Length: 300
Image (cartoon, rainbow, N blue to C red):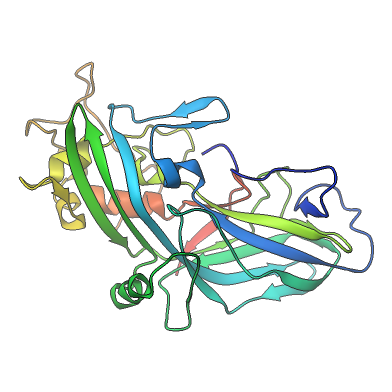
């Protein structure tokens, strides 16, 4: 996704975005962290981002009714060994319901902190439900050891499929680049509150190629895995072998021109050669910083 929704700057605001030069001045500042799934989590796909339409190559539309994410372990430090934040806090947010904010981290040294990181992993009993998240949903994620839980529908030409997926692909995202200016981490400035946004790119769920931000979004293989009830389970996705992908007609999966559809993992290792493993690997990279900022992603 190519935008950071909702970061509106005012010339008269006391809040500044976490980017820019090194002149942070002396003293202390604060960091306000929030998490978003952008417009895609709220309104689905296709979605308009900075004048570009992000849509499925095979014509499907997606609507989410829940996009729960469990995250925490927020860490802010510098290459010289100094530590600003080493949080043990854990939260669960529903990105479909809207962006969610964490308590502000106060009294931070004003300077550049070039090592920003966080974890996306299953919650435990200490996790705080943000916004409208129900405690029952948090408990379900604890019990299932899910770091993501999402529900929604996919529709094309009046044909609708449903999905409800609990994903267990925990990651540690470290050394995040600031998506606003391409620098490392964030700058805390004296007597101001810097904003940082954990941005979840839901388009990764449906990529057909890994190791690139330019993959196509496709859903035919997902729909074709469903049974007669048109409910797509994770177990259904595991039946779609990448070497023998099937379409809705039960024949080899092809595009509108009759060319075979290939899901290419590139150099990304897969637990097994099926659509479920592909999606778990792809969605493990959904977390960014301030829009497009990339992080070093490692499994937990």
